[in-house]
Amino acid sequence: MPRPVSGKTTVYRYKVPKKNGYSYVYERTERYDPELKRMVKIGGVTLLGKVKDDDPQQTLLRTRPKKSSSLKKGAADNSVSADKPRQETSDKSAGPRKAEEAPRIEKASRQRVGAHRILDFIAEKTRIEKDICSLLDKGTAEKLISCARFLVCSANEPLARVRTWQLTHPIPYEEGLSRDICHRLTQDLGTNETFRQQLFQLRFDRQPPDEIVVAVDGSTVSTYSENQISARYGFNKADDGLPTIKWLDLYASRTHEPLAFSLQPGNVPDVISIHNTLEQMKAVIGGRKIILVSDNGFYSDANAYELIKSEYDFISRVEVSTKWVRERLDRERQRLESSSLCMDSEGYVVGITKRVFHTFYGKADNDCPPPSVRKICYLHFYLDISKRSRMSAEFNTMLKGIREQLEAGYPVDSLDRKAKKVIDDFLEISCEGDNIRVRYNEEAISKAKADFGIFSLLTYGTSPMLSDTTRTFKEYISREHIEDHFRAEKNSIDGNHVRSWYGENYMGKVTIQFVALCYEECLWSEIGRVKQALRQDIANSRKSGKDKTVAGKKQKLLTWLNSMSLHELLSWYDAIENTEVSTQIRSVRWSTEIIERDRLFLDMLGVRIDC
Image (cartoon, helix red, strand yellow):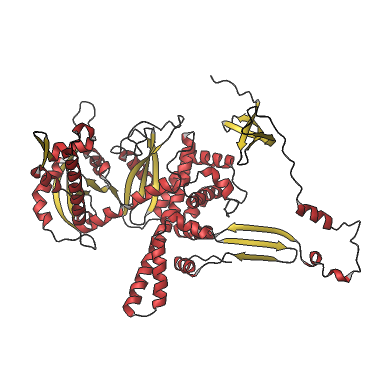
């Protein structure tokens, strides 16, 4: 049984070093709050004095008192009292009295509105804010939206820094956010599973009415916290030796929108986490047609068995080294090498499709044999010609480097594990006196190079596209956007760190990050639309030979957009400020000037920033 909370206050002192060679000593009083489960500050912070850094005795010195504001003093001197009116002067040589003629400024404000206006436009496009407001009360919805907008604009800053950010940025929650408010918000969101699943359902409902292609993938987040019960030691993608929490995402491949997420213990392998995904999807998609797309890390016969049993169509990357896949590839290799069916616009990828019967085995239960099902499926083999050339050149360079090291006298034991495996598989070492000779194993090298640039996809289901070589390739390639999606989670919305002591708070934080990603993905899609329009306009201008000036401006804009990340773009427009000054007579408002290139982008995007 834990000790009862005493409620005693703690007073402690701390130093803040400055560049002038002194450290200022402050005193602070705190008390443990059992509701928040942490220490909270009581009252303010008191400055006691300063100590010289090189003073061994650390003698406390008094600091000079703050000087009174000259503006306040001048205002007090010039103030007019109702009991003692201002005396008139007959000295006309003094000139005009400006203090009496100019109206007194009563209020002035300045806010950065550039990124805010862009996010207003995106919120209207993706309708994520409308969904949130329909599911939560007004206060909680405004807090969630405000925090999500901060994550989008702040470039991997922790959520606690929203307190300073909101001072210069307009946010929906006008009362203002504090550390305690954010703490309670993440706790409330983390325990509100009804809201989370309803939001996922609305995300699915906003997809096109026909079949939905859903990419599924997972990542890991490391943590030092011992209170995160889902943090387990397992496969760690960061390879930092810490326990991890697995983050599983569902992502619309065609519309490039996040659909749902789930958190799982870090020791759950990718190949079995598909079960939780299927259960979650059953609850939110209803009877809609779903095609799952996964990478080779998710493929196994057991997973394929579960998908077939649940009547899901799927596209899965399969390693060509898998035994039954290898057998069919060897039969079709000559046909693949001579195929002229191009998958991409550059003509670098060719492919063929093979209709096969295969028996899929489920997970064995105790001593019973594993269940099985035999179904018709399609194996698609693709050859990326440019990738084959690149891999071959890199492989030759690696072999040459290892050979030169060995012939120079480097012992094999001094090389890393990867180099040792290359030596065992592809090199032959012989000694002739004091000389070391290294020969290439040409047969093994040719056999390894035969698979360079080849990858295979397995499809199953009733959708006609699953038997089409080209359409299957394009659907799988669109899945690659989920990798950018995970990079955005890790590098732009503070997804690399848990920053929460308890699992409920972390679930709430991930919910806020999910909303922030809905903004980011929609904004990326709109920027892509603008880029495509620019390319088309530039091509038409060059073909007609007219409007070269306009085409030059659009070319500069396109080059600039290609060099900007999403955060850099938002930061660039975040410099646009609105300043408003109010007097007794009128209010004046002005905005930061915008150059022609920036105005062109905003016009093509459909965003208007009024002065």
